[in-house]
Image (cartoon, rainbow, N blue to C red; front, side, top):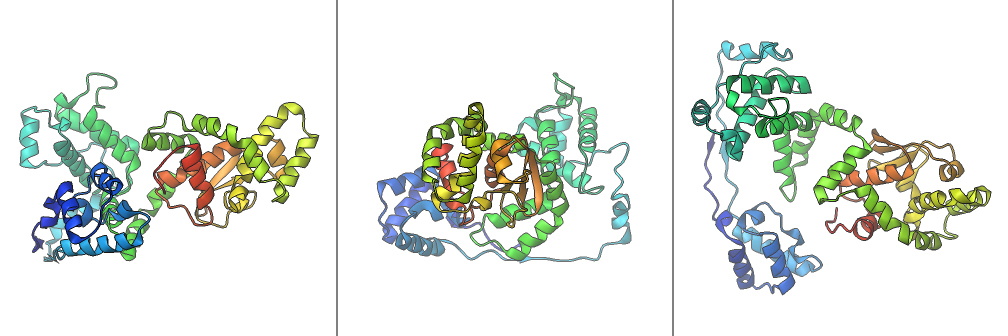
Amino acid sequence: MANSGTTSALTCLSTSDITTKVVEYGIEVTELEARKFRDNNVDGEAISYDLTAYLFEGCFKKQATFLQFACQLKEPEPTTTLTFEILPNDCFSNMAKYGSFPAVFTLPTFPKDILTKLDAKQPCHKVSTDGHKIVRILHETIAQYTMYPTNSEYIKVAKALIFRYPFLKDMEGNGYVNDLQTSFLFLGRTSPPLMHTQVLKRQYLKAQPDSCIVTNAMTKTFQWWRKEVAEGTPAGLCEEMNRIHNIENLQHCFREEFLPILPKVLALAKGKSHLEKIYLQAGEEALSKDLPAMDFKAGLVLLPITFKEKVEHHVTLEEPGTPYPTTQLTHTDWKSAFTRRGPSVVKTDGFELCRASDLEEGVIAAFCAYFVFNMAYPPNRKNTLTFVQRCILILNQLY
């Protein structure tokens, strides 16, 4: 395979270079816009990947002019020539072992630069580039046997690695989970087949991903995604959300911020839905000690109404008719949903994403799913979800 293109001069431009060229092009840059360039390190490489649409948010004229400017900076995409050769039959001998993971895993031959460092007992596993190269080669070797290795098979490979190179061994814990092994095992638990994942990442860096390539890659990883979704839990979704936005406790934060606005939500929803009437009737029959919990549930259910959106797009008793994360209650009717504690199910695209212990946990898990799975808010839910994001959880990044 030969690449006929050369490295684009665009990627060599710094943030200050880009800002200067934008002004020279005739685009008036405000101090706020200039700060966006600096804060987000908008250089030539960022422009080459079309990651700059938000820079002039709110001004379509500037956006259009900036896109023209970016197109002029870009050089033609390099072409790639593929040369196919007919391989001898013995090259396919390794395929016979596919699907049967060996009882004793044999390490692959590492590149000379890595092998030299390993033989010299250099801590190359602590260097990100070398560590990633080792992990990639191990994954490619595993793929000769199976595209869906189990956790025990990853551990077997990790043990084989430190048996050959004992200096990689961690001096604490079980003796084989050091920085390199941790990253390797993490990849094994959380990544679909590496090749298809990289294809998807490259496509989503583009302003207009190739739908055929994306569909093909998603199809090849479908079984993996289904397994991961089926094993999802509300706690797992919340933990990932905590990690993404550096939140100490998402559920606690949600409750603390939602309680003060609860009376206002119930007041705004008054007389606007038959569900509000059911909630009021249930409240008349309930004990006073149960009212605070009922009010909280009602606030979660009726919140979309205050933004002129439908409750069933967020919380429903029926099977959700939408691919977006939706909380389905297991109650038989809305009265019992308000008065009784019961589990809920978060569903996405027809799959059961996770089971929650109650309505609150289900609603929070459904919200987290947008961030964890990188989904955009649909238009018929955007107002409510944006309110939860910006006003309750105080998250500025819009999805």
